[in-house]
Image (cartoon, rainbow, N blue to C red; front, side, top):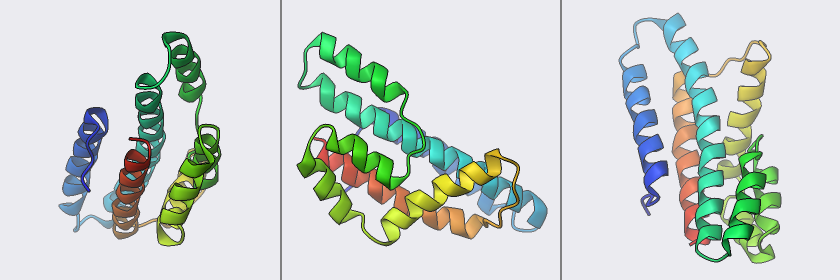
Length: 155
């Protein structure tokens, strides 16, 4: 199920282009390692922004302008998009949303989201991490699946 929300598709396309560029850096290991860190930060931001956009899209189709404004303000502050926080946010709208997403993302999908966020925190605080280009590319593939699931549940 491909992504359908325009802003998310555009964000994905920018990330895809950066992953393609990273794939061409195979002969410079230090640059590729730093590129992997950069991509990790961007993928984490992609998760946060996608969650925000999908929640706002959901609210826009169902709530009055005042409620949209309130939710928009609250959602703009959403950070640290590990799965437990995403599930908590969904639960504020519907227990069913939380259960559907939680069930669909158990295991590797949840682990990918949480690993990206955890690694992003480590990078932001100047700690050494050993994330590789191959690893972040695999996480990104799974992150896309989670975003597709969220999009489907919130439609």
